[in-house]
Image 1 (cartoon, rainbow, N blue to C red):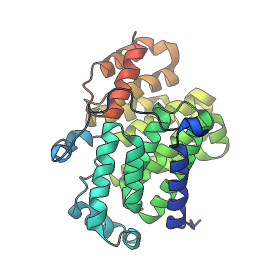
Image 2 (image 1 turned 45 degrees about the vertical axis):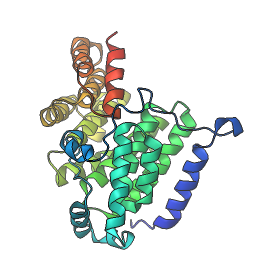
Image 3 (image 1 turned 180 degrees about the horizontal axis):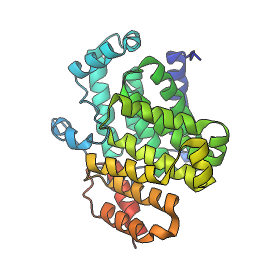
Length: 309
């Protein structure tokens, strides 16, 4: 079915919602929480972002946002071109969105990404999903953030079907949204197969996308945990062996990532239960020993450490 989507209307609506969400609590509305581990630890100012880009984006292989890479993206996805009349103006906004994302300034990352239009949405979506999953404590607000993000990501896959990370953020947002409403409800609504299909599309476009393999591993583990391995295999093709296969691939592609290791540990517990408790502890310990290079990695290192106390 063709998606009818007015990008400009949705952009105004999302900005209005974001502004409301970030208003002061003392006037009856909530603000986004700050990254809890310092506000200057993972700042990549000036040329530092470009210098460290390879390590920061080893897991998703997103090109550095410069005019050359943006023009290549537009050439590969012609439907994007009408929404980017001046690529030179969009480039610094995307760069600032990623800089804010890595520093843990998730609201700023969303705002800069949205200001760049659809070409900034991958950065904006990643920031919104990380914030919702790791820092937002209010369940209803978390679900709304994820629902809004999913709306944009769905539109982005229509505009940019050949952009691997457009499909990745769609699968990521849909997966986190499914968790927020309960995986069982999501499966009943047919969302599980959509998560899987988006992530498989990522791998088709980029076979070395470590983040996609992580998400596929999580998908298999979540389905097995909720409905059992037999039904999961027969109905959704989810297998315990696939959990291991996907995470081993992700770890081979990015062995220094605490995100890979921490999610590997959690998914092993979901898929195999207490029988693999030793392996789960080993993986969490390895994640906790990693040196984080940005806000997301720090959040997952702290999570891993809390699991091994």
